[in-house]
Amino acid sequence: MPAGRFAPSPTSDLHLGNLRTALLAWLFARDAGLGFLLRVEDLDQQRVSAAPHVARRQLADLSALGIDWDGEVVRQSERLEIYRDAAAGLDTYECFCTRREIAEASRAPHGSYRPYPGTCAHLTEAQRAERRATRVPAIRVRSGGASATITDLHAGTLTGAVDDFVLFRADGTPAYNLAVVVDDGLQGVTQVCRGADLLDSSPRQAWLADRLGFTVPRYVHVGLAVNTAGKRLAKRDGAVSLAALAELGADAGDVVAELCASAGLPRVRSAGEVLDRVRGTPWWQSEAIWRPWVVDPARPPR
Image (tube, rainbow, N blue to C red; front, side, top):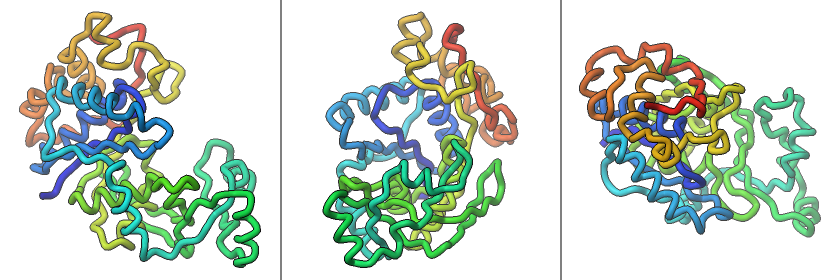
């Protein structure tokens, strides 16, 4: 069944920005008559010990808002062989560069997306052997200077260059761009709703999806939640999780109402209520959905 999805990483409790994206992803999928899937992106081995407990709290928070999903929750940590098998037929090479070396080799301005400059793309076997003696390599896909085009509901058609991006990190962990493409393809995800900060990575993922024989999904990149300084919202900004807000007297219904208001939608108290109110209307034309949402923890939902 064609579906949308929400795929949080279990590194901390969901904050208001995560919950807003989840609600919008659910609305876009359900209003379009699609299924809705939940996937736990728990590939970060350094935090995996806490991941199951955090993931359970995340799922409970989504349920508290009235967000439901279809089928079992998929966990990436249980799918490592699937990612390795999927990548087996791709043209890849070892990369020994550090992030600092890549940044220094790039001409992109500070803070901008930095494509890989191809430093390790044409090393000889002797050069690779020499580098292996001091560094464990990551694995990059050879894109051959390709480009790819995606369609986003708000941004429209976007064409971007595809660099030789990482498929497997130096510790052997599948990288985000590989895992997300394989999961979306195998799960039948046809609509991807996520934060606007991931728009630039979409051509890479579309190119890889095509190479692996998957249908490229349609994208919906929504505005991020930011703090009063304009920085991306984080747990350190204060009472921005459901549990922290509950301690201040705001229940799940208050949070749903605030999330709806932030997107220019009817101020109701559950996901089901807002879907009933907007179904069949052009609710996605609200400009508030696409703009950054400024969250002031000093003024919690009421």
